[in-house]
Length: 176
Image 1 (cartoon, rainbow, N blue to C red):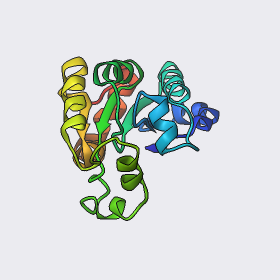
Image 2 (cartoon, rainbow, N blue to C red):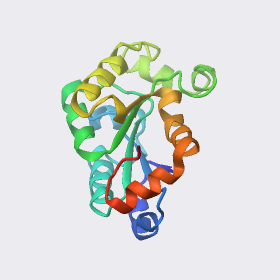
Image 3 (cartoon, rainbow, N blue to C red):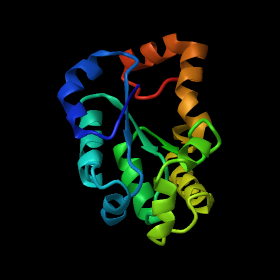
Image 4 (spheres, helix red, strand yellow):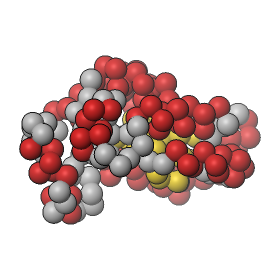
């Protein structure tokens, strides 16, 4: 698993495509670039990241979208964009930091979130709506929630890693 926000990962597509267990996980927190610029101004644009994800899939690389943490977005539009660009999607919150939100709470992002009028970063209603919209579009086997969702590939590999390689050889983008 290569986790990034950087479009520069495209330079390594040949290497990733050659690895039978490789996944590219791209963080995409919102579909609204105004929101993205207000909260993470130094990060690449949403369109650049989605473009890299689409091109990775064209190269045969399995792609995961990590909505981590969830920023404000248009739920239906965002779900559609993610469904088109990723093989699987993980919807995360400000609590998915491995410390039940304590580590994230010490960072400036939750305060900035509130100062900009985006509401309470601890509100799970938006992320849950996105999770439901994605589940409807791409199926529950391709959508994960927070830590459990992130860990699912490791669990899957531990239970049947050989199936992943066999399916990859048969051309399937998904393991059994």
